[in-house]
Length: 312
Image (cartoon, rainbow, N blue to C red):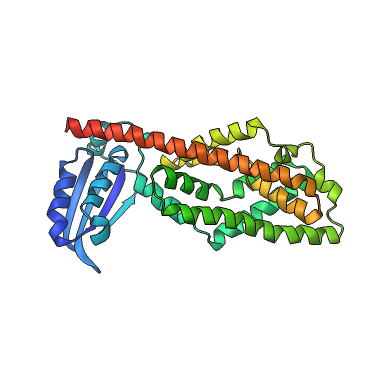
């Protein structure tokens, strides 16, 4: 179940309450007149089955509630109620499969901003990946994959193309491109200084049989990126965080960026091209698979809600 907390102008209250009461996926509707004072409005509360939330939020937006009032959607950890169970059984599909597009979009808009936190994690991940390549330690490569936050702007690009929400595309693309460039710009001189101090050598940077896959992309690089793109998008849209970690340690984006910085800093120019191709292949696979997955989810849920509308 999802919990709705609405600020409703007085002239819309009756229509909003009527909309919620008519929907068989909504229950626990409560109205507190003058519940808000700044800005003024009625406080309307309701619980909605996850599978039906997207249709309900869409109807509320059609009433203009997102501009004249506010729509807050949260997920309570536990709801004990036979009525809630009845509503969930009446809703189309299964709760785990429900997609609330506005919630997904809001999350990706926030997570794809070029913030200090995003850059800190991406730069640290780039340095860890460079150390993993230098020491030929796959465990460090895995650690860098987990730390890297780059999947959020990648997923935002997919949503911008599939939803479509083209206004999200410039922000997500800028965050991804500038993020990688800044991370390389910070890491490269650090590796150069480490080389001057004798802690790093070009021979060490170019040698590493266990991490050579980073600079030798092949067909499987693209295939794995496609599979990871599907898994990552499904994980985001269904609020399943566990599989998302698996996505992080499946794609060679941050390891490629870390290797580029290491090679530039130590003068191993011959491997920069391979790492750059690896990065490009992985990003292309993620965006292609993620966009197609979102399109399929849109089509499926559009048909589900269409059947629901005809039935009621």
